[in-house]
Amino acid sequence: MHNLIKRAAADLAASNHAIVLTGAGVSTESGVADFRGPKGIWTTNPQAEAQAYQRYERFLNDPKAYWEEMLDTVGSGSYFYRQMREVAPNPGHHAIAHLEQLGIVKCTITQNVDGIHEKAGTRNVMHYHGAVEKLRCLSCGSRFGVDEYSLEKLPPLCRCGRPLKYDVVHFQEPIPTDIMDAAEEEAMKCDLMLICGTSAVVYPFAALPAMARSRGRGASGVKIIEVNADPTPLTHQGISHYLIQGKTGEILPLVVDEVGKLLSQRDKHE
Ligand code: OAD
Image (cartoon, rainbow, N blue to C red):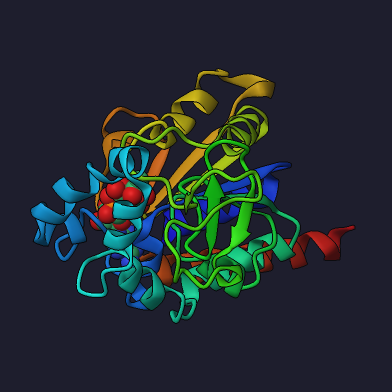
């Protein structure tokens, strides 16, 4: 594993436009359960997953009922989301922020709605599946802070008069076009993609690595590295060049240490 950590550090140090893709696995060491790991939300409660598939349609058909369900403190709705807002970054989040501060990582595209990357200091974060602290209007695309609304009168309404939903993207819901376009642009221009803590089975997010890889080899080519507890379809299909198997909170800080050594050696030679 140590060789792979050194390899990843060398690849990162040599890159011009590295981006990071993250999933729920980066937050498990902060105490937020993932979805499909052994203690995952869907693994341990398949009924919650079935319920989650209904949510988008519920909003479209009956926004008030959607909000009542989301605010049900016993269910997985806002109780879960409120809990998430309390959570602190772990060494994996800090390592990603550090790579951005070093000027190596240009953008972090996350499926996580928890907002922990920002708490760790990462500035350029794209929330592919939305953010827990925001509400979004499906009609005009406006987003508002959840704290701007008391949520006493349901559903909350946008300034354009349409009902707001959580910014969080539910199953069956299209990815907001601003985010989708920006993420695809990053996939098409990055020369390194570091994919951390995702099972890479939920689309269209999971298509971003193949999209980057489709640019081929040579000058326009991309290096794709996974850091994950288990192999994923990206590993099995050879979309990633290599997998560093283990915990992001342990591996990413070691990668950052190695990057630091390489950069200081480079400085000495310049
Ligand atoms: P998953 O739960 O599907 O995958 C998390 C991955 O991280 C699994 O492969 C775990 O083995 C791995 N993992 C867990 N802890 C780890 C750790 N400390 N270090 C490294 N790897 C670890 O979560 P996502 O891929 O994020 O979407 O799931 C994608 C989407 O499915 C979510 O955004 C959510 C969900 O349904 C929506 O809600 C729309």
